[in-house]
Image (tube, rainbow over all chains, first blue to last red; front, side):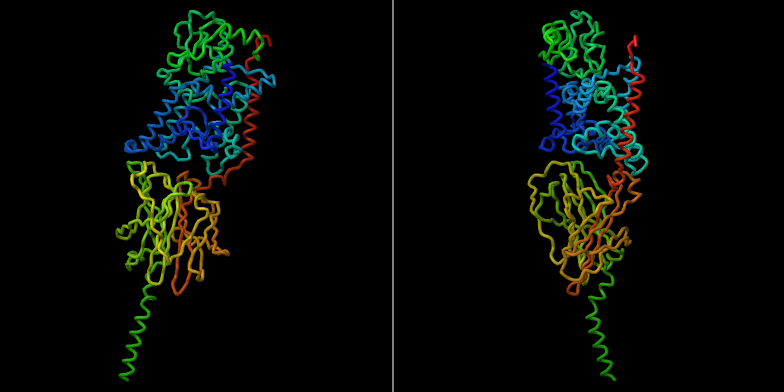
Length: 315
Length: 286
């Protein structure tokens, strides 16, 4: 039931965020998900664009911080953190349009009966810092543009290499971002990187579920404020039998939930709150997701029995 | 003899009186154009654009002709709606510089119009561009404006609302609304240098496709250059010189090549596919 609800929500949000602008929907520039602003007619814009752009516009001079522009930039930052706090990782698992594209590729792979590629744990650990490096990159490069006179073709540095930029506009019939830009050396290098990363990511996302999410700097930003979020993902460590279902079923291969033996907070950095682990946990009330004091969903032996034993699951 | 000398003086005087307006044209600029000045973001979020009024030479200010110049502007919303008429902008004279400013509180398309006279010459200088103001609307602001002065030529860029980001390599068409006189020349200038002649098409239409500029291509998103389109007309013994200043950016899509991009995209996918299959974890019994 949760999986179906999630799938419906993802599709509704995909249509709203990718095509909503054509019907007058404007959810602003502070969305904590990859709703790509390069899609013409999109219904809202990923905050990473505003973060890179405002960083140039406002940080250029401290005097500008005292103007309406500075206040607006801070307001967007505040709105982003508010949105990220309210829904937290639900943005990734339930709203993100680029996440749904990855889920489509996974569904296609499963239909073709191709096994998912697995990383060695050492490889996975080596990939972990990449998202922090990307976050630093998208924050620092605009500062260099503003303060050291770095060429303005370096602006929006993350968008220039983000795989969503060439891929998401395809859903609006726009192939322009797959082209190489020969305007000058900088634009050429960036478009070569962009197209190469997009092609590689597309195949990576096919063989590995939610492959891009391992590198997503938005996950870091959302994770920063999980402490003040009303969303909590908790584990009753005493009730856990250690069956490992949560680890095996997790699309992000997170083993923290399985291995956590002391702390009840198991919302880890890569978690996207898809609730697959909770759906798969065969113990009553061992894994629970809360919004303030209200329990949204909890693990249940009966639920697992209905889902797996009566043949409703699709392995 | 005395009569002949007296007649000569009278004829000379009459000739001097008759010749005065023609002689005044000697100091008149052939045309005026609008050059863009600084853009200033104010604390309330509104934005102010400064414009310089320039002639084909710097001496056009000396004869007092600059006193006969007036500037007008109109703010329109991005959808093309907004103020119904033009408002006059106060002109500032400072040594050899004639400037005026326009302030916008919201995102708007600005149409700027300068009209001036000098002897038998009628100047018009125009431009249009977007201004991105971020302030809240001022209370009690009246959208009503005045009309443009009559008796001047005018160039209309069409369609005006789709030319917010003017770029090289794109064709711009102008409709000339003149005095039904004789159209003489149409040309394009950069830094007062004539760089191209334009053909005046039936219906007084001008078309100009700015060539790509390597300086703009290297310069980045914000690099611009100003190009002036000029048309001259003679009607009823007067000369009408009308200009439109285009602020050109580098082309967005002219240097993009889709096929190499798609080939690279496919190649990257194939390489990653091979790598994934080569290095993916395999079962210990495999």
